[in-house]
Image 1 (tube, rainbow, N blue to C red):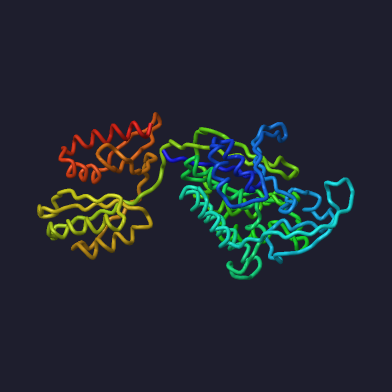
Image 2: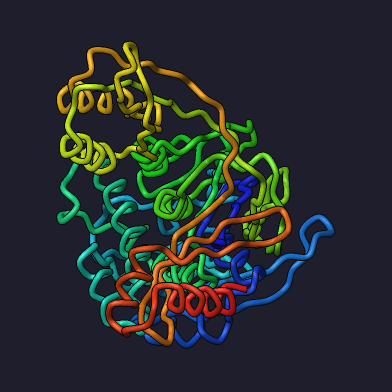
Length: 440
């Protein structure tokens, strides 16, 4: 079955928390390091370790910046307006490419240091070039590009300028580049296909940026939440729990916000954040699997037809299936005065009822359609293309309470049968065996 990731963002979400949780979940550390080494980004080193948060063991992914690239992102006193107010900005806000500043160095035991240096401020085109030239897989590149584009659009909206005109700290910062690339690499390495994020817990109050104190959620996070309909829960905790990078990752990878009613947990990973708030800064990621039987509703449309040709009925069946009908079939019946006729039955979703009825009225001689809403139970299933000894084949995988059941798709089997000269039954059995060996 598909690989489904559930991210529990009880303490918010940030780029480093996501990467740490995915590493704890089983993403290959060597693959990650080798891929990050291929990025043309300097001024940092990577540290992966274990830490304890409120007695809970967690993975910690840390991008350690050199002095020139330091952004004080985890300096709690500074972030909340209690520092000297002259440090580098934390969030993505437009500022000049080169500036000189002086401040009390926090690491020199009170000695005063005046210094100046030039910071790199990359725009979106610069970032996309870095990703393109890296050794990331195509899937990981696609994911990373999507995250960067979401973040860039949010920063542009916050400043009221076109994306291409913004040089923003958050996107261009070394730690943001590494965090986003690392998240994309880990998701790809784990083979994640679906991501469930029900809610992002956010703090409140104000946090410092280059322009001064700004409200939480910060403008970029608000823009992403609005654009991608992410669900926020304001916890009342003073501080920023959801970072722009974290929000962009959530927006890019989330496929659903609803957990299945019943599921099993295959594996759990816990990623540690760097900031300290009232609750432990942890993000928990779980690989889950739902095997329960789904209950939903469908509609059955039914009509009796005694004055329509076989050709017309064959054509209407084709049209109904092409328009999205779940199933179409006919049954021979006898109507009044013993007239031989056919009963047309169409199974469809509620949203397609009107469209199906329109086709039936247009393409047959009926003057009335019976409609019935029906409950049904269906197995979880997915369709996949696999490589077999005969060539590519499409299979359907259904989840049972006791395991899985695999069905080779008819058209695939027929195509391989014509190609190889083997009988349809021989191809069906061979594809079924090989698919079972691959999926199990």
